[in-house]
Amino acid sequence: MIVLDEPYVSRYLVDTIVTMDLPVLRNATSVRMNTDGRMRLVDGAEVVRCVHEGDCRMYTNSEHAIGWIAEHLGETDLAKTIALFKDKAAFRKLISGLYPTFFFRSVPFGELDMLDVALLPKPFVIKPAVGFFSAGVHVVRTDEEWTDVLDAIKTGMEDIAAGYPPEVCDAGTFIIEEYIEGTELAVDAYFNAQGEPVVLNILAHLFSSVDDVDDRVYLTSRKIVAEQLAPVTHLLRRIQALMGITNFPLHIELRVNDDGKVVPIEVNPLRFAGWCTTDIAEYAWGINVYRFYFEGMVPDWDRLLQEVGDDVYALLVVQPPAGTVPETIAGFDYETFVAGFSEPLELRPVEYPRYPVFGFLFTRMKGGVLSEAEAYLRSDMQDVIRFRER
Image (cartoon, rainbow, N blue to C red):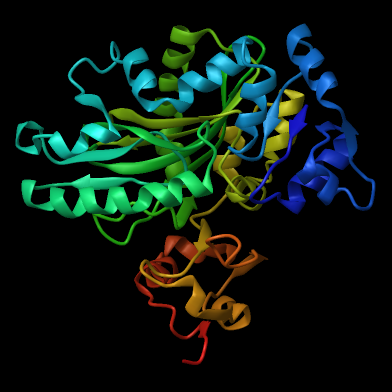
């Protein structure tokens, strides 16, 4: 059973739904996407029945669908599992036995002004306890930075409230936790009918600096998967042992420190990497993550890792630099942007400024040379953004 919602539905996902004849909740988004009548739409009562009887696997492309699930399935184990994962403070408490020395605390927004940051271990990360897409995330390394961060949090409160329902991103409570040094990973996986984790994607974030928290570049390669598959799978087994969940997809963000220790940052339930990021698995590994989940298939990683070379596959979230005023932008030169990459695979434009990104670019970097992705992170994009005349 699929629940489609804003902000973005991948055409690749729609084609998979049609090919597999998967039932889709009838809502405003699915009706809009189904102008050709290819998708099989079902009413909410059928989704509710499906969940209560336990005879279907659920998936959603978007955090926004969580609101519908909370409203119509609020007393089910499915909704309770989603709520536990979405609440970062509750999830930290759940796994605290796995990380007994890890520092975290939750603070209501109204008490942030009274917070004595001198007493907190640094560096630390502060973010909404229920959040999405790096909204409201800040790193604090010194006491002196706190005033500016607090101002930024207050300024961003209205944007968070306007852009996301409270089940997706709620800035009423913040979680403060120690900053985890190391490589940041984004993993798509599901727990099968026996509760065994099945990893479908392992992506590494590429950042422009140690203070960068924007999700703009995701990478995958033989080296990344070969190094991280075993520790990531081990962590997922430990989480499953605490929760006992089955037939459940998720997207988990984590960091791996220099000692190889894997520490979760957050878990996004009932979906894989947001917007269309997860589709990179098709280019890199020939894996249709949606089909694998619904058919209970397991990637043959031993074979896949032997067959691929040293190329790196990347997904670029194409968005304006921080501080750009949307009203000043008249358009975006997609052709010039794509021409800056030697092996672009697919560009998926997005309607800007209705959404905060211009689009998504899948590309391959031969031999693992990351210079093109690094150049994108450093770019002011003045050559591809068309600004309005003043």
